[in-house]
Image 1 (tube, one colour):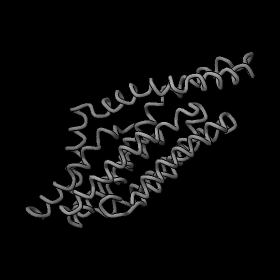
Image 2: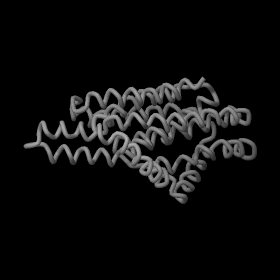
Image 3: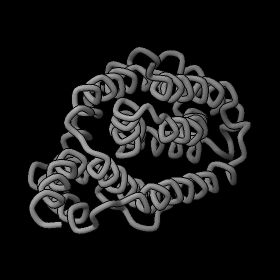
Image 4: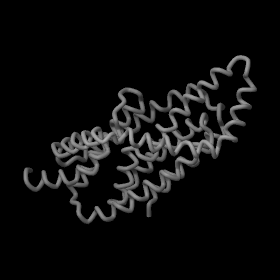
Length: 257
């Protein structure tokens, strides 16, 4: 039962709905401070999984090779391209509702805040692609779905659900009901990962799973730095490491260690 996947997608749906309904009622200082807390939480999760590592050299090698592959094939740019092209139809679907919402907001403060409100809305619209990647193709989500499928441990996705609930709510205050639609591709992607994990599990060993967990933890740690605005790591370019880490861990344990 993909409990973590279902809860994660529902959290985005519910958080986006609440954020869209509240709108500008959420204080600006809260919108600015919460991402820092999200980053600390992600870094804490990453450290918790890194300490389960079995073979450090194997994990480091997988992370370096995986990141190099991601950079060479422009993986992050490819994900951004797909998300940006998917955004158009969704915007058209909700354009009338969002336009009405913006019209009422601008009319209420047209004399003093019209330019500021429009600029802020445009800025958040540019970040739509970023949150699509965060919810649907983040290292935490991929790692969590595979972990739940292989071991039944849904703690990663449950913790991610808490973060996604508030993140969706914060962005929905500006993007409105547009955020709700992200749960659809998110569910499809996470379910595919969850189902594929059942085929991977019979071929793994406890050491391989431990190194896979540690590699995912490193990506989660880097994600925390990016969310907090400390350092913008190319998270999506690091994702191939999750594919390489278990084979490298097996070869390391068999022939070297």
